[in-house]
Length: 87
Image (cartoon, rainbow, N blue to C red; front, side, top):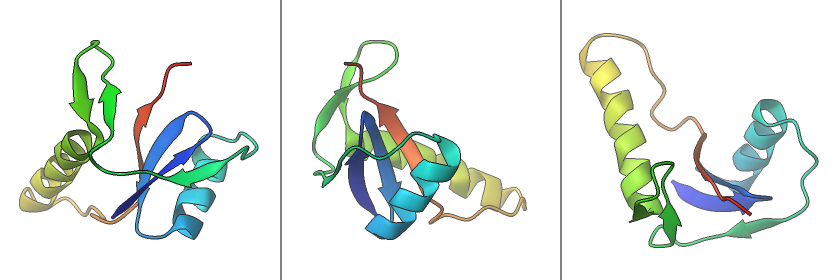
């Protein structure tokens, strides 16, 4: 998965078009800018701890794998919001 910054959100998706569509459907804001970012970009979690985008992505993918192991259908490569950057 790639990582894109759309406005103040960092979204993980396979391709930029999926990230754009996901953003429009889930956030509902007009897209001001789209920039591909590195998974090693450091961001602040909600609790204030600084971590990398990669670590946050891995946490979400681990949750999705847990659902799959439990037999609950889950799409691993569905786009998701990794973090919202505070302005």
